[in-house]
Amino acid sequence: MPLYETVMIARQDISSQQVETLTETMSGFITNAGGTIAKVENWGLRNLAYKVKKNRKGHYVLLNIDAPVDAVKELERNLLLNEDVLRHMTIRVEELEEGDSVMLQAKSARPGRRSADSDDNASNESEEKTKNASTSEGEE
Image (cartoon, rainbow, N blue to C red; front, side, top):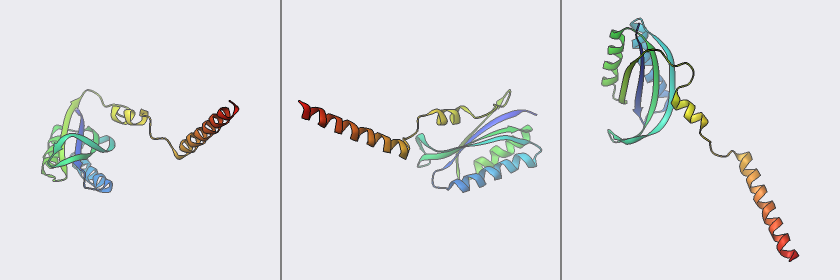
C-alpha cells in the first residue's frame, strides 16, 4: 500500500482534548478502509504565518499513513467537511520517517526557558557579584 504523510491544522479555540478526538475520528476513516496509522504526532498550538479563517494560531497534527488511495481520499473529503480543520496537506512518500519528525526535533533541541532552579541560581550569583563589588569598592 502507498505511504502518506498528512498534516492538519485545527482551529485555535478548540481544546487539546478536542484535537485528540478529531485525530482519532480522522484515523478511524483510514483504519475502517483497511489502512493503518503508523505514527501520530501532535505538534501543539503554533503561530500561523498569516491569518487563516480569522485565526492566528492553530493546533498542528501529523499523521503517517499506510493506506489505499480510496482511504486517503475519504480522509481528505472529511477533512474538508470538518469545520474545526483550517488546512490540511497530504503527500505521498517513499518511506515513513522513523522516530520524531523534524518539527519535534527542533522543538526539543530549542533551548527552553530557564527553570525555577536556574532562576534561583542566577539570582544567587547576581547577589554574590553585588556583594563582591561592594566589598571591593570599600577597599579602595
